[in-house]
Length: 190
Image 1 (cartoon, rainbow, N blue to C red):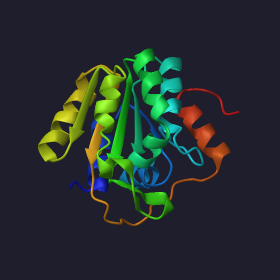
Image 2: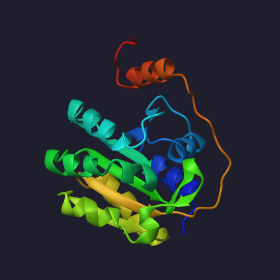
Image 3: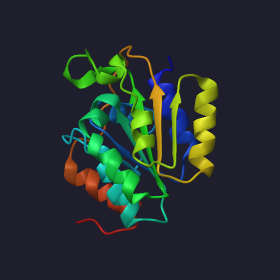
Image 4: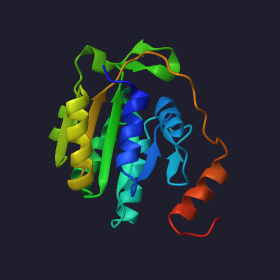
């Protein structure tokens, strides 16, 4: 199993031009630990909503690459998002699911991916241009190349260890997050 912090650090380092949307909990902690940036939008309190927020941003900014970092538990709670993204076919959107096989924010209960649900196959059946499951360093290298050169929509399920890592808590203030993200988009704060 891959270390989630190492995976996210490599993704962030490779995708310097991307805007990032993170799902609730661990993906937000992981991206913050990799390096906080105004280009990171940490989505608090919207379980299952990260992929749809990424879609909205991708549609509003077709010239900008968007990467959604989410967990298997959150994506399972937003399965309809995969169908909507598959129909919309945004060329600039990547959904990266960090799959530890557990619902980390609610007590580490096993998620459906631990019991055979294949989110990459679900995304493929929804019409994503590219899907993959990453299980090792070679697969991660292939994914990084695809993220840099390919067109979306892309869905990558990255198998990560469920071992606990220290929390790296990003900004929690919604207004502050919104305004600094707007600055990254060259928009005035509201």
